[in-house]
Length: 413
Image: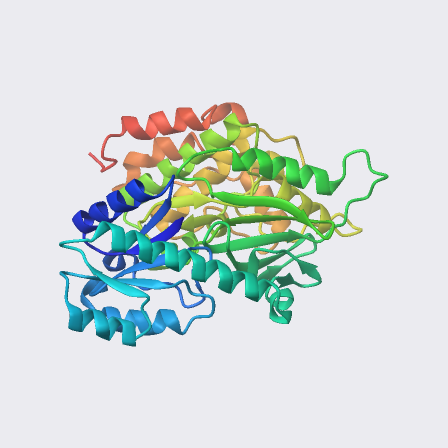
């Protein structure tokens, strides 16, 4: 049993959860708080759930309006309407708007409530089975020429020489996801193909359980194409936050989250190699998650090298050793964090020049920039991230985290 519970009141959510835990074996219960999280995304059908429990007044609005919106979405599960107390007239009105049933939260009839949920489960599974057998299903599950059952394509987000990226809805994860589909078909003549390395690296990332690392929901192969389904970030990335300006203490907190995430992925044997604001995603609660790790970016770089050896893309966040094609280690990622930290504090990149090669030259030879006097308390921290040689930097992301914690609140003085 998979249930989406939409209610702002933690006491009522706890009560409803207890009824579910009592009646079903290991139910999956996902809570959505309208005041904090807003409305359900317009593209979201909730098809991965067996039932939706909807409060009568989400975020103080009309639950009936939410109900009307839900019933208009294809494959949306049956809705059980949650009233403040048993009320026959209000229940009849909810049924008229398409609810499967209604219950009063102050006095839930456990047996009737459970039966409603079982009826919802039966209805939803029949509806999904009928849809999957219909001609419309193949088109809905199609990503370019590739069909991935259980993932509904919503729209294309990006394309590159290596992969196509889509917004999709996962029936298995019961949420919107970002789907990255590798273009390359495996070459059996290769000892270890790009295809195999792509799967291996993301398998490692999927096992990194850290709140500031993107969550990988699914990893697989369809029509000889590798794909990953990962967390979707409707709040966007750090670039948008930079445009609004970031208070220095907030910049330090964001830096700490990034460093902690790096510590976790480095421990798993993964280098990021492409840290920049566009790969730091923002969640609705203000926390961040790192995306686009080592191999995926390395493959993109390989694909973007022309016959003359020029690399297209931004060099603003590359460490000196990476910019000059030398071997990199975790300290290269720490350098990139230093560039991001300077940009969060000042709103500017530390090194600018007319050409990519000139920027790369400055990373190696220009002096480490000085922060303005009001930010001087963090100059030492910055210098230990932007050292020209790896030996001059923090030697691990964990060491950087400890240095940030030693600054206390992070406020100058």
